[in-house]
Image (tube, rainbow, N blue to C red; front, side):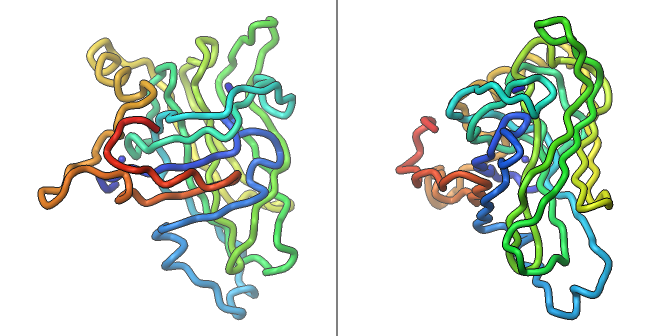
Length: 246
């Protein structure tokens, strides 16, 4: 259902497969290197449409607003406004309950108007048998991407929250614009051995600090130093200190 550089990212995302066709209707990216360094000039609009994937990997869930019925997803469920943290950049995803596979994508150049663009989101995954006995192999639905500086920058992903979702094989995420596939990212899921599983469980457990977050020798650990990226919904309140509470 529904760490590159040793830092942590906080993301507010619109779903756990991710929630509903409107999940990326509003996108704000704060302190994102891709956004800061990638401007688009009027002349660029004559160039072919491009797509770029960054930060694909294993994430962990920090908090969410709960699970809802969502017929647009392959499992019929999605998680509302999950907040996740990047654990490590990888295309190999261990099958552990609570693990999340996500990626950031950028599509450009796009016209500045209208302010939103219709995108098609496709996920293909190994066969999974749902509780009602039906078989799911993925999902295919429309989402909205917010255009800023002639580009869309957004996140998409999937959370491994149920036993029946722990299936081995290739998971392919695609984003289409009109009749053109502009984004494709493949993850391969696998069953970790007991040693890796023992290490991952506490990392993926709610409330732990993200792996790779290093304490500065000059000052104590603080979540205020984390780059914050908000995708959909509202920006979470600024943390007040070094507490492990999300």
